[in-house]
Length: 343
Ligand SMILES: [Zn+2]
Image (cartoon, rainbow, N blue to C red):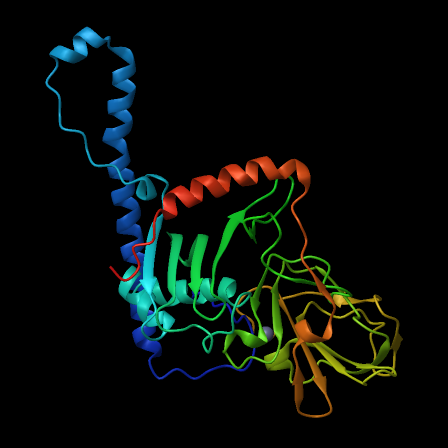
């Protein structure tokens, strides 16, 4: 069992603290279990109390011995936790302090996936910035983040993102308060659909590509017309992979890693047009979870940011979904409350 890391592929990193991490993961899972158990136990008397209150009339109630009301934490009642931090040093350190060592590091990674759409991480996260996060621990999985509120000294703005699953959609996504998606989408995208972008060049991880988390079998397309240069090199790391060299233009190179088994038609020298189906996404090679690693290069060594190279746009929620989204925003804003960061 491995923790679900946001950088889903790339070169393996040797970690001298492997056993320590393994132990903390086990402890973290155990703590999550205890927390969950406590949650369940805390819920039971409340439910019983409210149900019995419905079955007795006011007169009976007045004479019954009345227990003092239990303090109810609406965040806890919603099955969430809240972390409020003021940046004084590394984001991860602050989240470990606020949320504990079991969930803090993973929470920092998940939260970073929202922050990167507003500022560069870590360089533009500044001392004095504040962050409020609503999240839920999950056994053996990264925490689920419901809402992020980030007050940025760099932009001078309060940024907010909310997790919401539109009716009929397979995946929940993060949305800005106005109903536009948090993540930019690419025109001539290399992948037809995906759940989330889990690694970007500007997230400070030194990772050379963009990772799209997507079920195995998602359609992969050529972002530009070109010629297939090679396939399945360095198979142990890359798994099934394709390199496509752009015809004309800048002569960029596009690398697609961790694909499903390639169609036999894909061969070096094959010409493809923009938008042509190349393969399907997979989970092969050094990959923690099904995803596409998409990398753009110029010449031998220059790594390009696909979000600079592609035209981008923000998709908006469909009008019929707006009302339920706004209800959810109100609920999450209520749970976020007033920031207590740094107090
Ligand atoms: Zn990657």
